[in-house]
Image (tube, rainbow, N blue to C red):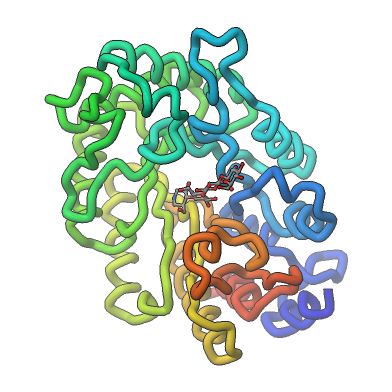
Length: 350
Ligand code: G3I
């Protein structure tokens, strides 16, 4: 708590009651949600739930709403779905007046083995995916306000990723390029007309061949009134991003998607570091400040969300032990310089 007070002192932001302002309060003043990925297995950790409930206005299950987690058994099973862990996150979020963001209906990873190891025809896979989207969207209707309908369907060169849902063997639309993506958005819209529907991807934050491919797809969807509301930029970055050229490209890229009439969310931000020396953490803070500043000045940005919030539980170290220290709170739930930098950017009156 001491650092929180000094963070508030540093950026001079206080609540009406005289306490240090939180990320969610400072974000709300800029009509933004401030979110984080949440793992059900940590909801029994007092520090975890204390910081989560205090600082964040949006929660997104890190893994618990993915196909393999929610739908582990075939539709022939009397009980194909398992909503327990996802419901625990939703219940916590709603009890703490947090919005809930769903992730994700269609992804090539963490798909149940009964699907990927099966010998389903495209027609069978189409029925499986339609039923999955319909069942899950209806289960969370009124509680999940926005969904990553399709995640990471585009390659770095802008071409379509070859996946079980596209053409391996796909749902019968492999000859129509983005047709299976369009179909997924339509099924999600039919199942829950109130939900905001997003396309979500990584390495597409700047103007590059991948974001060009996504832009072309979403421009076509908007022209043909496919029910897509927004684009999620994951923002898994490193200190390499902290330079004027990259930041300007992010700004311009956000603007072109905004000009399509799409909402924007940063959905999975973390800044992967190779050490946690004070000077490295200061550079990390500079980058969090710069990205937050871009969001504050782009009216179509609706939320900034980090992928977890404590270095104690970041996916990065699971995948690469030499990297980490990527989030606003350290492994003892103490606010890092990045936390004060985000508050500063949210509170900057410029
Ligand atoms: O739940 C099992 C557990 O029962 C088992 O004992 C354990 C040991 O293997 O694995 C556990 O599952 C792991 C799961 O996370 C839950 O912790 C999987 O192995 C592991 O692969 C999975 O990693 C997740 C990763 O997506 C999968 O690609 C990360 O937690 C999650 O943060 C990460 O999130 C993705 C987003 O969904 C999409 N954007 C990229 C982002 C980072 O990769």
